[in-house]
View 1 (cartoon, rainbow, N blue to C red):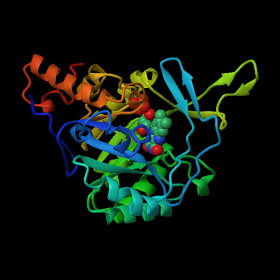
View 2 (tube, rainbow, N blue to C red):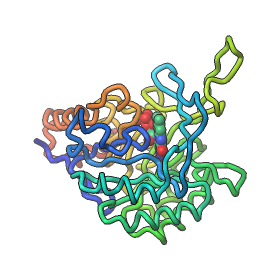
View 3 (cartoon, protein in one colour):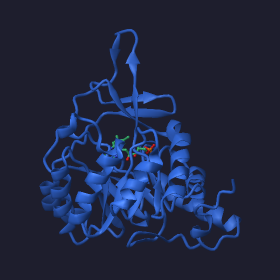
View 4 (cartoon, protein in one colour):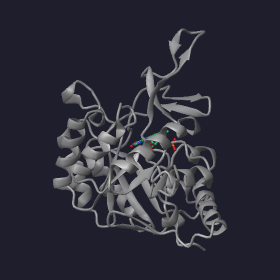
Length: 303
Ligand SMILES: Cc1cc2nc3c(=O)[nH]c(=O)nc-3n(C[C@H](O)[C@H](O)[C@H](O)COP(=O)(O)O)c2cc1C
């Protein structure tokens, strides 16, 4: 076995494979299929200060080599999470990381403060692709001002590892990553979903109830890979790469582009054992290439 361990901020992970928020529930749902304790880190569903019902149906659409979703952060709120879900998942022997979402800066801060008190949650991932209700619904993550304000506010409230998840719906993602780093992020993860749309021509109606939605899956990989490569060159904090990773080869490509770890999202819907297969595939790749440690391939792309 090669040494697969990597560090993300203070987080020491046994391997670089994580699950992406919203695609792996709270982990427990997959325990009948795989040994979830083998996974490097599980990022749970987007959690908000208050309960959210999510968007009306239909909120999923299949697209060529991908999908659109408009789930709308359906969850029971952070209080329910800490009272009812945390006690169930806290002893799972991997890093359980909470994805924090919000529609105002104060909501992010309060949610982060509550999670800061939960001993067995070593990190949060800040989803800054959410619309800022006070700023007319523009996402926090699409301007450097928005990124700086939300990251700075959460940083002063949250003491453990802070991962900031970047939106790809921007002109210059490196600029957003630098703003996150400058305001205290320990790591950045990217990409969140790309804004997309699907139309039913016969009915002359949009397929999603929200008209537009977030695109993910194999089709987004080249964009995600390009953005990870740009961001890895722009910041000194570890980068977590995701977007369209369907197999171990995709994961290795993200690591060569500069990702210290990867997340798997949509692929979990196709194969619930994909995380384990990716992990084993990375190990085989390292052995075939004579690498003792996964760190040898991080950013090893020759351009
Ligand atoms: C059904 C669904 C729900 C998602 N929910 C969240 C969420 O709550 N918070 C978040 O930051 N990202 C969420 N995402 C985005 C994924 O975590 C990931 O960034 C994106 O799907 C790209 O990775 P993939 O192509 O491997 O799926 C969701 C994606 C899907 C498909």
